[in-house]
Length: 149
Image (cartoon, rainbow, N blue to C red):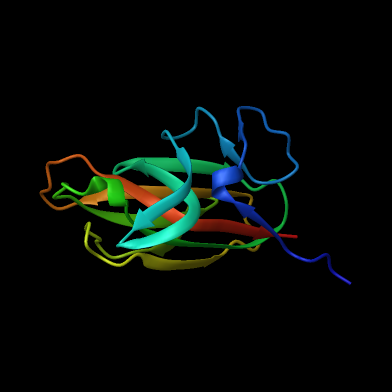
């Protein structure tokens, strides 16, 4: 009988340069800064946890075990109230893009993210700016969870 799936909230993941290798970990020094948060707003909705990043970011995660999926709500963070920017979110598994959102602005509802991670060892979350916006922006992966066995 397989072990029940275990959910790893991105807001709780440890940071590691070398890794404990017991579960998913944010790869220190291999990506952008990450603000792990409890209680954030995306698209006018409140979420219990997630991570917030710059509007140009790449976050590397070592899975360190067999993981089945990644789920989140991706969108412009509520703290980016005055921004004129739009962003696009992508999820990569072992360097291959698995999912990509459309362009999202501050007032847009968050995009639903449901990605299979079966057979992957690493995951990378990428946010890119889209269009001519000049003002700073923050993007969030809300209710972000990696499910593993």
